[in-house]
Image 1 (cartoon, rainbow, N blue to C red):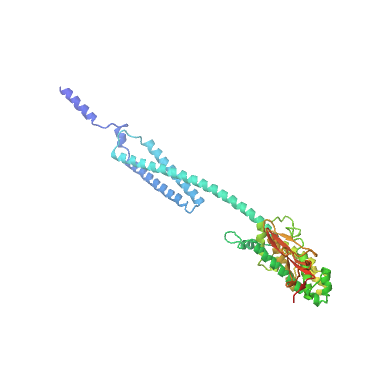
Image 2: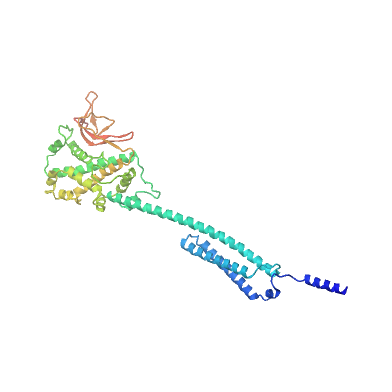
Length: 422
């Protein structure tokens, strides 16, 4: 009986002891300093990871690709260090069957940090995806910039051929790129009035210089158009205005105004943009900015056509000015400057005519045509026309007419043989 009781006591003592997967001596000999060092490294690494994550977030506002890439590398580096610590701990510390409360807290902390680590990994992947998307957007924007630069170079080339700069072209539009002047028939009618006035303004010094040079104005008017009956001698000025008009509008019906220019295809908006850019400029400034501008060729050809060599020689005693113009120059003489104002008015009218869609149509009336109140307007007012008299006939066309869709702009004419009330 005593022996049996002793054995029972030994069994009870043995069952009250904890079972370990390794010898008790080895477990007891583990140094707490090593565990503390591992935990310190773990927390230091977590802090570094948090700092790197904050840098990664900060690099997105404002968006900075270089800072994002640097922060991304730092986050990945810290994640690798965490992974190394995890593997090191598992290799050197197998999970015990029974753990102490201190070990349980450590395991819970490690599990929490691992969850946080997974969160960071997800965020890093998200940021990497955003970086790729931003890189793709940047590449697309770079392509758009390159295409825009190519278009700009092409536009500058076309503007240079037309004597404009980019600054002048931009000045013709407002902040939204919309022209500050509306393209309407009223705008064209105003330009027609300006051209008609310019013809009259140039004819005045021309006639005065002819008088000063001793020209026979009656013979000169008759040479422009013969057999025209004038009610007053002063009306013969319309013969010279007709002469100017006929030559200045020659070629108006062509898009190039009969000026030979290579590779200058213009759109409707190009014509209107040029009109807006030039309408307030001095013609000499227009020519000075770009002597090779097509407007310079227009002025040169029209001056040589309107002013006859004999006429110029009688005005100035030589042909120096004519030779200067023929050679590509634009003299600053008062006579030539008045002509440039005329040339600018006709040129702007042409630019505006081709801004409309469809184009403005120009029409002319010939000597001998019956007067039509629909298509013609007499430059002489207070006419005496009896009902029984035959319809008056056109003696001179002083200004052509125009058609803008259904709108008619009457041709200005001088009627031959019609009496005028005093």
